[in-house]
Length: 434
Image: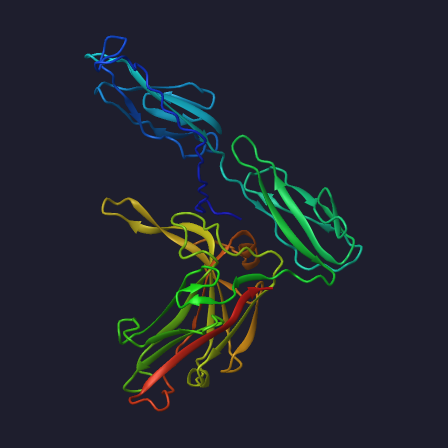
């Protein structure tokens, strides 16, 4: 399910960092040991998690003494971390205490400093796919989940016993409603514990909607704090707006319209693109070199709901389809040739899903795109066998691009002083998953 190139990079949390200076003497710039006072400064070595055995994570220790003498290192927690020269080996998760010492000499008293920090466990992840709506009947459901720790057991628990119960991995349906089940993997000495909650609709229960955006604060931000980026261009102008783009937002923030009105001497004499990229609440970019955890996480929701309109000229063409592309948090480092020394390079890639909508009217119209069957994997980042529903269950939706499949270059704008060809997309109301 996961590629070896998929990157999970947990953030280490330092619990404490203490510096203890030895050889602090009396006045006159000296010490009780008969030498000048000196201090040792040590770079913080924390932040890195343990490695999966038999591999051992290591990091280089760096410290300097103000007296200029050599610095040695030692560990007072050798079962958690060990020191060999200036190399610190992270043996298991826990508190690591490392001391940097300078023995003194050349007129200086001995001195030391200590760093105390936490070595975190590797981030764990549980994949528990929501089976979707279930009929209210006596047929039990066998639950299935897995974690990234091979061979480790995942347990299930229902927090809605009036709607459903769980015994082992068998779910029993009792009443109409939302059945909330938590899948948990307890973790071990290397991996942290992990859990995933799924809300399963039973019978006629309504699926809770997820709001991607409710409206627009302005032309560059949604009401939920997600970034808005509209862009367009033509093959004859270097693929830039060059003064032909206009973005407008309704006074109440309920709609956003983006227009690319491009002049052409003759119809069909250029290719154009035009689209609006919308980011999930609070997001403005993907995480660099790692999985994007923030975003919208699909549970039992089965469809993307949105409303849009087109200008009549674009709609009247035979090339009026609209693409909806979702960029997921699923990150992969893909090969990108070699550097000037012949070493292999990689570049960031995030899995994308795409659906194509054929508008039924130029006017504002509601559209619903089935998440399982309406979207296909448009960018697999070199991975094989990706499944749309699995990707939506394990990854967040970070951004959504709504764009012209092919813009208008054949029907001119009425009344224009010179022939221009407008491609205008208006997004109305909220965008939700239901």
